[in-house]
Length: 93
Image 1 (cartoon, one colour):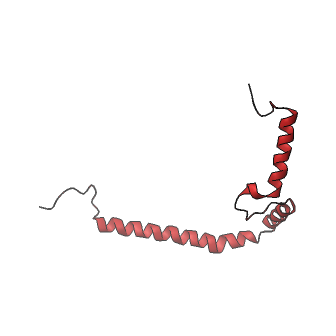
Image 2 (cartoon, helix red, strand yellow; image 1 turned 90 degrees about the vertical axis):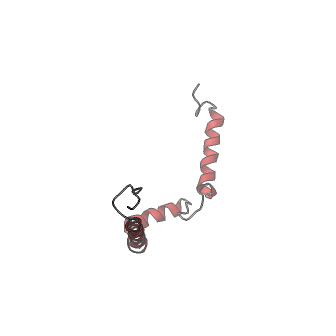
Image 3 (cartoon, helix red, strand yellow; image 1 turned 120 degrees about the vertical axis):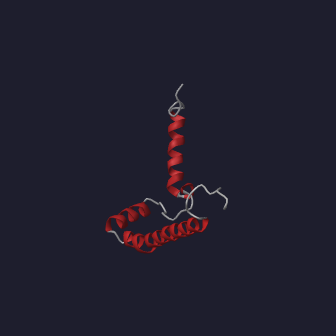
């Protein structure tokens, strides 16, 4: 008599096949998004307008960290000025 320690009726090979199929489906979906949908989205006039506006503001969309952008330095200077004028501005007692 075979051991009955399997918790389901599917043999392990069928589970592995199902997992491989799921992985391939996810990979295909991500590939389609990356190669088809994102390039089409980049050509959208509304998105291009927003990208141009960000560039005019000194915001680099490809920046690794937004703290490296010149616009962040300006915002930090403004926040420090506000905090100097009113030290309790960002703190509640």
